[in-house]
Every structure is written in C-alpha cells, then in structure tokens.
Length: 501
Image (cartoon, rainbow, N blue to C red):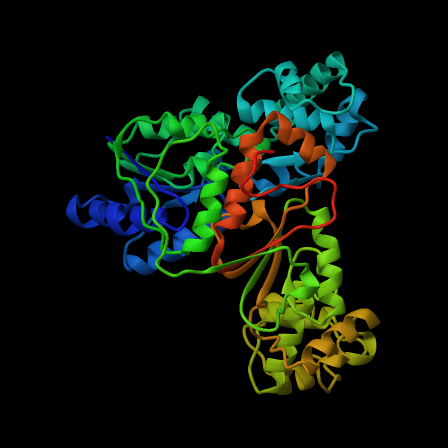
C-alpha cells in the first residue's frame, strides 16, 4: 500500500511523515523499527530526520535513516577511502586510460551524492547514469556549448567501466545500480521517502526496488519545488505517482504577501499538480527594488539568495566591508576552523576543558614561539579532556592573551576585530547566511533577500526549460517567514518574478 503526501512549502510534509505515519507504524501497527527505512534526498536532510526521529521516539533503534547512497555503501561494504573513485584518486584512472591522461576530473559532490564535473565528457556520462539513458542521448539532451567527439565519449565511458571492474572501484551511481542488480535490499516492512520530487530515474529505480519488497510506503514531496533538473531529476515521476493521497494544504511558514508572490510564479509552471494552499494569517511584507546597501542587516536572521555561486562574491565583499558576520562557503576571512579555534581559546581561558581533537585544531593556529620547542604531543586522540593549566604544564603551551594570539592574516585580523568591536558574539551562530537557492531547499528564515540576476548561459537555458527556472525562484521566494526583499540589479538578464521568462 502506497500513501502519497503532497504539499506546498511550509505545509509540514516531513512533520506528517514522522508524527502521523511513523507514529502509526510504531504504536498502532507495532512495526519493528529495524524493519523501517526512512530515506532522504540529501545528507543534511538525513541529519535533520535522524535528530527529529530520535527526539520524537526515544528508545527506538532505527537502522536505516539515510540517503540512498549511504544504503548502497553499507550494503556493498565499500571502503570509501580506497574504493570510491573521487577527486583524490583519479590519477589511477588517468594512468589506466590513454585518452584521459591529460584530462582534469575536478568535481564536487552535491548533497544528494551527484557528482558535478567540470570535465564536459564526465558531465555527460554522469548525467546519462542519473537519467538511465545512453551517453550519446545524454550529450544531445544536455546541449553543451562545446563540440563533443562521440567516439572519444564512448571510449572514455568504456575505459572508466574497465578500470572500475579491474580495481574494484565505485562511483556514487554504481552504489545504486549494484544495490538493485545484486539484490542487496535489507529485510524491510515499511519505507518512507521525503523530498521525492528531486529523485532522478536512477534513484527512483532503487526506491521502487525497495518499495516492492515492503508492505507499505509513504512518499512526500512537492513537484513545484523540483529544482534538480541538472542532476537528471524530473517532477513527472512524482506527478504520475498513484496511491492514497493525504494532501497538506496549510502553510505554517509563508505569510500572505509572500504567498501572493509565490502564486504569481506558479501561474507560469506548465507541468504541475494543482494544489490547495493556504498561507499563514500573518501579513508579512514584500519589499522590491532595493539594493543590498539600502537594507539594514543589523538585527534579525537573514538569508541572502543568489542564482549562482559567482553572484555571491560581490555580496561577500560587501558584508566584509560593512563588518557583518555571515555563513558562506566563500567567507575566507572567517572560515569555520578559524572561528572554532577562536571559540576553543575563549573557552579555555574561561576555565573549560577541551578534547584532544580541539587541542589539535587550536595548535594548528599557533606558531613555534607559542609552543615549547621539542613538543611531541601529536597523539591528540589519546587526550580525553584537558584544561589550560594542563596544556601549559604537560603539552608545551606558552601562548597567552586573547584571540589575537592565533595565527591569521592581517585581513582576517582586521575583519574579526571589527566584528568584536561591534559587539558580535562569535560563540553564537551567524545571523546571516549567503547561499544559492539550490543549497537552501528545506530551510526558512524571517528575512530573505532574493537576487534576481541571471547569467547569460542560464537565461538561454531557461528559454528551453522555463518550468525549471520558475520552480527555482518559487523555492527562493517561499523561504521567507516574514519579509521578502527582491533586488533588481543592473544585469541584462533578469528573472522577473510573476512574469514569463
């Protein structure tokens, strides 16, 4: 039996999965929690789900709260440092394949486990695996701006296959395919699936295989938030699902003014399920035509959203110049490890004890003059807990003073000093986050600033698949719990909210 839980942003789909249906399985049907799989789309969603479930159901032991790739890794018993083909060990393949010896295989893993390659041939191959289509069809579908040599493409694909088989190596897509091919599904009675609209055909293949062996399944999602077309995902699979429908309609996040803007975007999405959707009673506020310097960021929580990574860089520069603390992968003036070292040093000086791992991190920001010459304390894993006095007498610490004793650049020092002078508490989470829209799916914030600039290549792609772009900005708009700021820059290419592209 399959139950489908569709619902617009903020309507509590995950809450319904956990508090209604998982509760029903555990307490009414008495299902063994070890016979339940709760599958999420991303690592972040898995972490959130595990926290939510363990708090809601203390004492229950769940074996399968995970992404699909994690289930595949576990079932195949893959030693990821040695068997996973990633950025650290591509040289082995380059030595194996004559045609690839001069190629770069730089890539980054997305939250869902998809490999986003800069190498255009690998981009085609990865997309083909996700979509479960031929590589030549994949090349046609992607419409890349460079000439693709079909023979070279087929050779790379074959060489990669031969290399993995010979050395028993895996890529992320292999984990899903082999999970099905080798019939490795654990013995389950029930499977839950969240954010189903983002699955690509390969992921659906694995899910359907697991589902077929279960008595019941529960699937939550929203086709209007399907924003991973570049990973091969399509909302069609979710739209065409059949089962018992438990639609969620009341948003607990989106206020009326933001809801109105969101509806204006939905009008332009052609392929979608019609849904009932009610906003919060709060009015909220939408502010248009403001530039970032005109917005007061001194109080409250903020999400600043862009379409691409490149568009974040001038925003980061502005926040640096104005002395604001924020989270962003491009915030090189206050990286996470430096911030953590500052907080460790502060805790030490206030009398707290720290772990061996924290000692190791702290010492990485100290110079030779700060640690007694000849100190051999490299076995940090042997230190359970240590205070400042013990570090001085047993582990060679000489440094004293405030955070300024840590090794950092002049620019970092000046930036942190400006934060401290403004009263910023570095031990608390940053109030401001700068991100692409793709990276904040599932998140929400009181105040959202949405940049509507598009790059030329994205604007051109949007002419071919307008629905994808509309869905993406729909997700951006619906992160706002109170105020939505829509900026309109001087770029030639714009996403005009409420209008067709």
